[in-house]
Length: 409
Image (cartoon, rainbow, N blue to C red; front, side, top):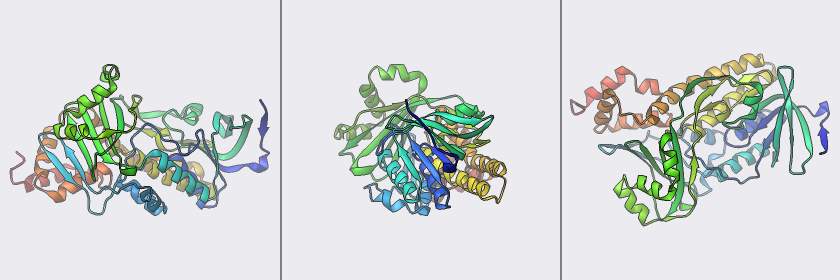
């Protein structure tokens, strides 16, 4: 195999590994600040991936801030302004005023994000496999890998950013410590239907089954389900039959599905750990799922990746520009990321246990049936526009229950 090492004059300011929801925005934001950025992606775009793709309202707001929302909406991706949360014994519908979710397919969204990075001045190499993280002692100094031509190349940078997902090569190479780890709880499957119109996100919880229904590109509707991991083996014995068995737990949905057409195969995910990683060190940083991974129950992954991209790009800009020591700026990035993510992480994990709601939560849900203003704020807590500690504070819960006039008893 031929090998080529770029001379030191070709030092990049940053190399970003992974060009999806975390990597492309990080690269784009750095390039918009004038930095020389190399963005590496192992696949060729457009390329879909088998995972959920709802973007909660805070992520939509960042797409708007970055000037990309109109492109996503123009891909025949409808805005979603209502959510129904149906527990069987009760159902709530709402959404904070002005908040919008969207659910573009990854194959469409990731291409838009990567193109925006290139437009900002990023050098994008698709079909590039990173094989090794290059280090000088404990400091990361670059990467070694090969492109479609098969020639092995070494590239150097002031910082290497791992946006390379759950099984991050960067995280493995630097032995990034994990913390706030929790057991993996669920598995998920999804597929797509035509002739199943919907304008909102509908969430159904039945025993230990979670069903989400939402509109996506080209007039298709996605249905995703989650269930406990210990049921995976039996589920896989008959995926189509078991998927429909779960749908039958909601008879009105099952009737609509029987009159619709499934237009794609079933896509499953069984590797869903819950952890935080230390997201920085000498010459390296982590963003997106590489630095923080959780169960998809509340669909916060893409919005959190966007928030992380903004925070890490700000920290790296501060460090490379000399306005702050890079390590200090990246330490603040970790602190800000955790302050934003940890309450959502804990709440999300609790929901994904499928344990019956605590008595206080049962009272809250009953009270919300008669209070649309607070119901909208409840959905704000679910989608990320209302801080979870604020909404679920004892004083706020007591206030909402008191407003119900005893109907929540």
